[in-house]
Image (cartoon, rainbow, N blue to C red; front, side):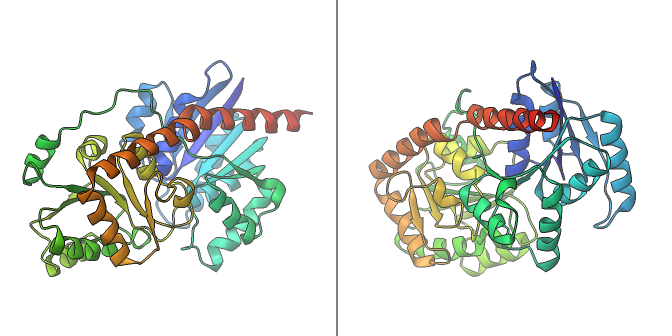
Length: 370
């Protein structure tokens, strides 16, 4: 049996965190003993891990450069006698790989979840340097693997494992009237949903500009924007400037995103870049038509015209037209949603993702022993 640690910066309800919880709780208990740790702070997903019997620790990193946290993490990993340490996202990838190397962990795996165009010279240098202590850098899409290949990560350290989504549980009931009443919208209003971090990468400002165009030709349209982030106040001002206040609701963090999504008519993701976006997988699993930008990673989920609609990044008129057309053609929207569900069922199941990671851990551990 292999003892595995999953290390991530926080346990907030976000894409990478959800994938880590799926993996941690889904690995076969007869082959793996799993623990999790939050580098910076915990979050609501800690309850999901503990409910599944996965112990959770907090390292409490307080500063961007925090040598005491690195020392605590190294001690924690050494005392835990882990066979495998897997790290997620930049901060945990940096601190976790250094600590695991110092602690003498046999197998070190780093996960990258996006085509990280935000990374500057320093971050890219860190990634290249720490690739030398990683047994594998796993990207969740071909686009992510290609990004790190071009960054200089050696080919023999790269692996691609698609993110997955659990689809075997009961689907939320589409409480259309209840959700619209809660948001203060008419019962029959076509509802567009965005869910994600309100940060530059997501280009939510483009969505608001597109909604401004849509409201001219489709005045019954309404929109819900779920999530928090550094741009929230600016985006709320933009919504006021475009006279969208009555048609748009900023909902902040929500624990009932599946319920909101089930009640929506269209899910839109206008990002500049992604990895393999959870929100798109969730929408497709709920048979919702997706309008998204043709961003790296997203194009591996959405097949334009078959499982959703893709538009160029930054093309606001195209984003508006796609939303308008699906509002006006509910049969077409339904066809795209059903095709999306079938694609998730065949290619992006959580159990397939978990099996791939289990095989990777055992293959790398066997190579170290042999």
